[in-house]
Length: 293
Image (cartoon, rainbow, N blue to C red; front, side):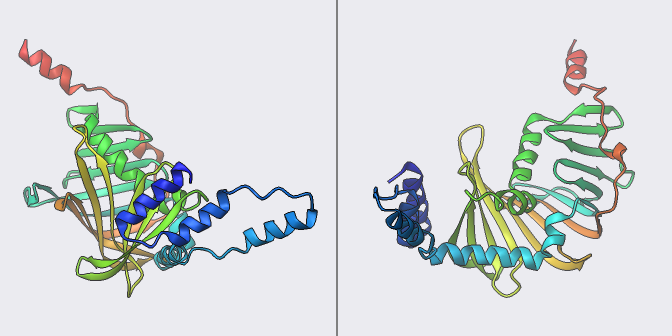
């Protein structure tokens, strides 16, 4: 039994699955064919291996994910390149709201460009291009704080767009059933998707609408503590053939961290390149040092 198979069995045991079918399937896949001098024996062995029944648990989980993607809009959801939205956003500290929220405008371009403008004057901007993050205010353009940028990049790497467009296309990705449960007062099928890097997300899929209700993943923070990050999707509407959640909530360890209410959104509208341009001309840490002198 390979290390990968052992890891898979441990994961499935923790989640409470029946691992026998997957174990048998992987053992058959990984076992070398029996030595034989007969060409017909080799052919029969290959035929038996190719017609081996797929694990029913994994097949059911994959079918649930495929139906979720189809319900979200299928190819329209999988291939849209830009989204421009506006609405109102709220931030929270230890689950409690901070202020009355603010207006926001967001411009997103696949795969790695994201600009969010805050306040009625749109004078606070957070911009991420590739692996670089910027904060733009009346003081100038500065690099985004390292922790805030790492937090954003982690969420981006576990986003629905990345999971459905990149993870699921890799034949080494494993889709596992995690039973059923209640998420946001809805009865859901739980599915865990594990990529080749042994990273995973668990999606709660509404059994009635087949739309994702919640997506969660875990990671270790800088102090090595385990943190659960979750996104909750609600108030779906059909927008240009894509089922869009007009209410989005982010949680950390079960406590609300931020929330957005979309009032307008458009897909595949060209975004001017200047929206994603930034040149650092301000260093807040240097100014703090100068003040102390």
